[in-house]
Image 1: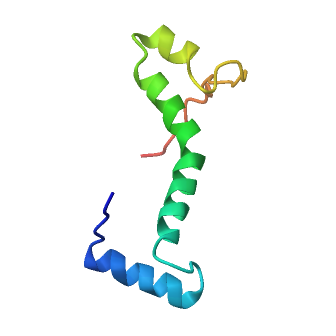
Image 2 (image 1 turned 180 degrees about the vertical axis):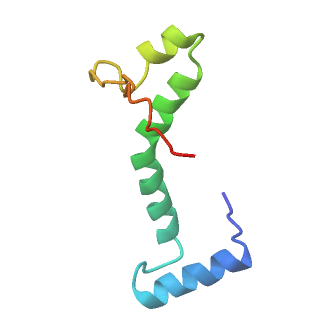
Length: 83
């Protein structure tokens, strides 16, 4: 595989190397892949929710299912205004 970074990406890679954040341009791939590995569980969970067939499935398959979150609204009707 050959990767061709854009000029702005090349500048960022050079800056990261000069700052000591990475040691080589190839390190960018490792950093990017690690970032993807960390995000993958959240992406998969969101995809499962997005593919739910109806509202019941959406809530049943939500990453928050079983957390006993309270979604009840406050019954406050506001305040009187003097006009």
